[in-house]
Length: 284
Ligand SMILES: Nc1ncnc2c1ncn2[C@@H]1O[C@H](COP(=O)(O)OP(=O)(O)OP(=O)(O)O)[C@@H](O)[C@H]1O
Image (cartoon, rainbow, N blue to C red; front, side, top):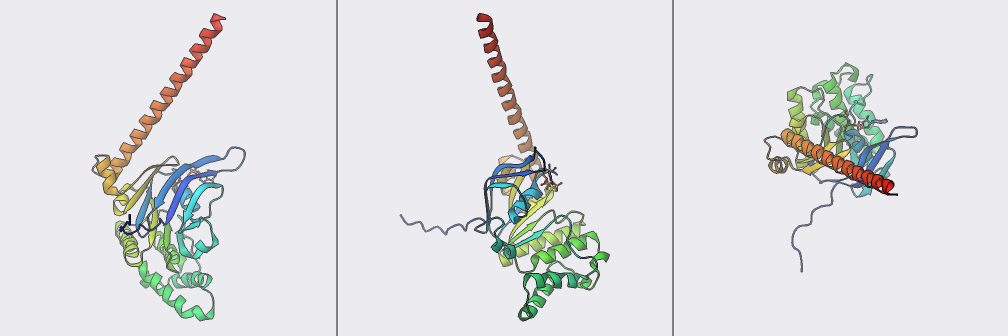
């Protein structure tokens, strides 16, 4: 039978059995533990979880800069790290990567020239730089040295660099840390604008749970595992919670209770097995 439903586009990111070990020496730690998730195209997916749960590691795996990655990780239809993905992904790390001795516009000119070199592309580069400066609302600071900017302004220069070349996927590692509420709101408006107008997929991490409400979809993480993948509304409904934060805490409590129940069950199995061994020994 013909199916007339419009086909769902393939996810921007698809992970299955994704495992990452970090650390040198004989005993590297498992930081992501066989996780699976999808990041839908053209939407904002929030990656949320407490500090140290593995958010940055997951993002580094997606952009292809993380070593010791196993399992399946497809990004925009290619294996993560594929050279073709370089120009299709914009990545902003937690530490803003800008040159302090260059102005905002010079920083962008430099990165634009790396991304789109050659004299013939000069006009395209100029337009891209102006657009990126406007996008992050730094027009009035375009001629300021990056070293003289506030922390929040420097983060926005990093974001502007990531926006050059109109990437299909934007990967943003805690972009709103240290920003005041007005700038945070403006940045979230920009993310929504990018998804609505350009169809950009945004994968953004945060450990501030109230930012979860601004995302279309959520990936909730804890201890290297995905606790839930849901929309904020579905998560609140499923956990009978007023906020995503409350829902997240309920899921954490549930996961802890299950882990304790499993540990107790295993302990009982071991105790019973030891008791049986002892009985056999004494019967000999
Ligand atoms: N270079 C490294 N070598 C070994 N372990 C590491 C390394 N970098 C990070 N880790 C460990 O990997 C785990 C996940 O770190 P990651 O930075 O991905 O977490 P995060 O959720 O992004 O934290 P935060 O919100 O604080 O940035 C942590 O337990 C951390 O200690």
